[in-house]
Image (cartoon, rainbow over all chains, first blue to last red; front, side, top):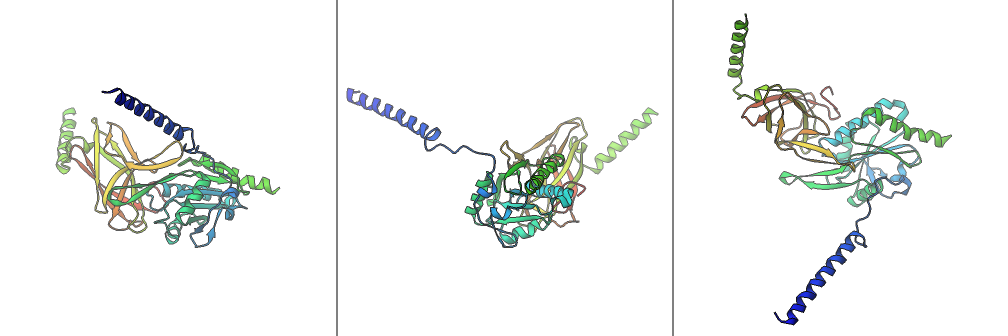
Amino acid sequence: MTRRTALKYAFTGIAAIALTLVVGWWRVDGPGAPEKTELRPVALFKMEFRLSDHEGNEVGPETLIGSPTMVFFGFTYCPDVCPTTLSDISGWLDDLGEEAEGMNVVFITVDPERDTIEAMAEYVGYFHPSIRGWTGPEEEIARAAQGFRARYERVPTDGGDYTMNHTASVFLFDAEGRFTTMIDYHEPKEFAVPKIQRALNEETEGAT
Amino acid sequence: MKTVVYGLMAALMFASSAAMPAIAGSEDIVVEDAWARASIGVNRPGAAYMSIRNTGDEAVTLTGLRTDLAMMPDIHQTSTNAEGVSSMAPAGEIEIAPGEAVSLEPGGLHAMLMRLQRPMAEGESFSLTLDFSDGGEIMVEVPILGIAARGPEG
């Protein structure tokens, strides 16, 4: 090996190391770093998105301001988590009775491709009558999910179908649209109902 | 007297083994509280739940499901991570230790009924066959409850 080739190898080696370091910095601390995931939803009055409810009315975050709100993300092709959560929500609402009257209860789909307005209308019809189903264009669903800090991902299954992974928590907001707390998936009724009451009571405090 | 009891037990054992040709192991399996949710049409996958108890003294492995209701029945596991994101994946084979029971219940394991051949109507039922590693099988009649059902009692 001549001196020149040796130098060439050394230079290439150093350049490779330098490049690795730059790429590493870019991805971890630099402008290419993933945004820090924030788990608390923002206030409803800070969100922006346009969707349709299951009766075809145009809706957005402002639709929810004025009454306490409960929001859940899911999809109607979901065999286990979504019907379970919607049944849980129906049970909580039955328990609260008149106390929860006027509360906004919204199920937002993360699968607008299959969950059309008609599909949502049919599906929510099987649960508590207060539950509204919201759907819309994919980019608007994405904006809504971003506001709620909800995550979702399309996952292919055997036979060319797909399922969705998604945040299964139920988000609660007071009448002014401020986030109060969330109910975890399958949280027992003894914990869930008082959390809803908290969101409901903040309305009374605001009113007096 | 003791001999009579033993004799009777032997006769009973013989009778039961003649009636159910399963090999030792899966014949000790008892399935309780089976239920399923009704479906909307046939495009969405269905789900069924039950408790599978091993009353014997040997571990038994559940290897698969069969039903004429769905072309692709499979046991799936739902899990929710620390960030509250839930996902679903095939659970594979499930070993049931002696004296233990495995619960298929909302939010955990469930019999996922993919490619429904007919809608699951509330008030009807369907048969589901559980296959075990020892070659044995158990057929369960699963009642179909409403879409909003939360457990075997509705």
